[in-house]
Length: 315
Image 1: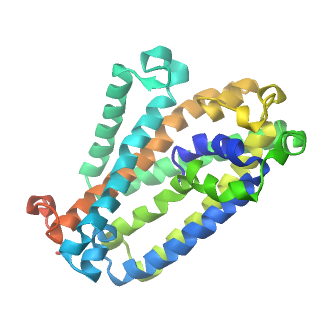
Image 2: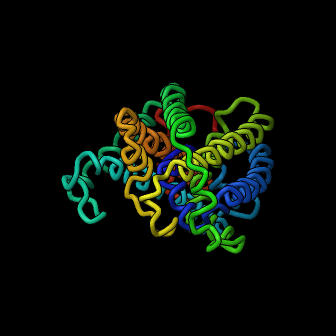
């Protein structure tokens, strides 16, 4: 869940909700937990590979389930390219017009995005054991970096006037629920469902699926609340002459640290801004491939998609 969302969501939410950003995060997390508990209960009963795409075929029939299955698959598959684009976009302040012009990727930028996707494929090609080992290492980095940035901002650059003297009166509770969608908050939590695609490869799925989903959502909620507070509190006053609505940095976190003169964080953020979205990208690619496997097993997709190079149990 700590993907490109941490690099962009704090700015989007500040622009759309002001101080109500914190309430928005909480409501979004509660909404996601409610969905996750229902999903995990069902998945625990049917711990099959790619079951999040197969569930309507199991509950009804394969023909009825086709549109639901493919819509679920597309929702996962599109994230792969989005995260590759996010990694590429965050290189723009350092590579300039070589990869992005007028907020559009150049030919080289698009090629770099394709290279990221190929990298995701290679990680998944060698199976769940390699994927889990790499993910454990990268998770440490992708959690350490934002927590380190948050700590530096909290210790050195918090201005409480940002929460009282900026145009916060412009916002109200009516902005909270639209912002959950328009600010990418649901997208920031979207990774919770990835574990369901790996249901057949998880020990004690009845216990661990629900536990891992709920605990991860709560931990990430705390993380995003701290990020939102540090981002809004550390924002220089000269960036807020038009209030939160006028805030428009192409690379928000990097832009903020540069504006504050925290140049020692720039290299760390550069590495993390590439790795963090990529970690989400290869996880979603693994999920999408397992969903295609599930669609094939339910005869909703060509049979060759479920052919295994190294056959295991038929799940």
